Image (tube, rainbow, N blue to C red; front, side):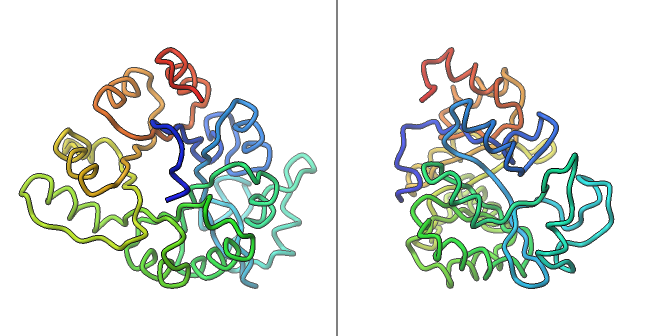
Amino acid sequence: MPFLDAPTPLAFAHRGGAADGDENTVEAFERAVELGYRYVETDVHATADGVAVVFHDATLDRVTGQAGRISSLTWADLQAVRIAGAALVPRLDDVLAAWPGIRFNIDIKADSGVAPAVGTILRSEAAERVLLASFSDRRLAQARSLAGPSVATSLGSRSVARLRLASVAGIPLRLPPSVAAVQVPPRLGRLPVVDRRFLTLCHRLGLQVHVWTIDDPTEMNRLLDLGVDGIMTDRLTVLRDVYQARGLWP
């Protein structure tokens, strides 16, 4: 898939680099790009009037200190949400237009966001530089149906569980044609997810393995030694420094 047509391992700025005090904002994305990141992980919800917006939570509370559910607010309502005079919640189409050379890993956070997100991507002619992700297998199936095979996707939680089981038990597995990557944590509790068997099966299926959200340099190096194809981090300079030390920074 064109989205992954770059030397691995890829470096993803998770939410634009959430450790720097803001996330999913124009300022966060600009900071990541200036550091040299070419892959940005972000999130999408839809407003009450069907505008795809870049925001992680279902509500404004944690990020803004104001009450309000994204899906219950119009785009005009969100434009009034400002911190230090700056607009906080960007539109997806504006973000795609602002950085035409950047590839966006987009996590669709709610069912209501699927059609607005896919529609925005297609209208923006950004299909080749976007990968759609979600924890929900149902949501991803809907996105694939709307977007067609030209937009790369990852796997939902149930599909990841089946993939992990297949890596242990050797069970055959068929995947939709647009699935280009599996994006997982290194472990769930005490249960490891990313190990050599898992990586071997994913690579045999033609999938890249991207691991989130890794902020510790020791863990970054361990995963790179294992052979992962990408790392998502909140700590942008930490991951950059690890990649630079290994001669991997683009």
